[in-house]
Length: 239
Image (cartoon, rainbow, N blue to C red; front, side):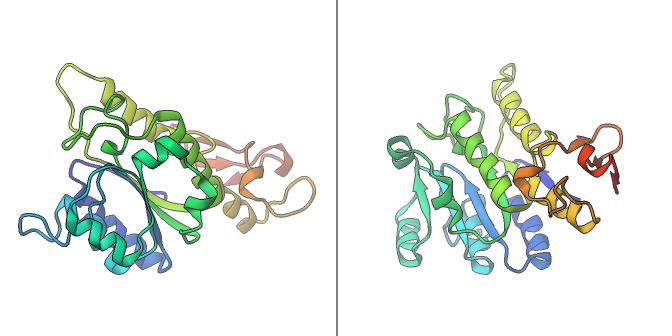
């Protein structure tokens, strides 16, 4: 199973994070957001949407945050004290995103948490706490595609969509984002390569599968939800 959770408030991420951390003790977090979400508490609530990364980091200090453009003094002090890898939106606008540098802060197993306000408000204005500026569509897709190829993304969430009546642009953008990583053939190449090797399949050269060589794998989630090996493995079926 590859879990994906959809929700409103970012606070809901904590439950699935804890479950995955139990299975993957060396878990790390890739965080897309307009806000650092690293307050110890907000309005007396330590499990607030504004505290989710603070709570996660208490158990999982390997995190990377991108798209950030709003934080309070408390969060600024926390980031500086703990040397948290935070990539601010204005820096990304100037210097771009560099996957190799971003991923150097992560372990092999990664939890992906996406607050949709991390994207440009021009792209996704329907969110609870929008901020000017933000990540662009194609630059973000490129980084996410690189993440799924380089790391074992064990689960993800997409949160903080707040639909605007009679305005479907944001809703569709978020749905398309989810589709990109859950339904398309390139969605989880590291996991597929691992499955092929575990089931005894080899490449046409007789070697192990790697994530960058799994492009011929076909997924049929609508009818079977199973992976099928390509012609090099004789069309064998993966359970």
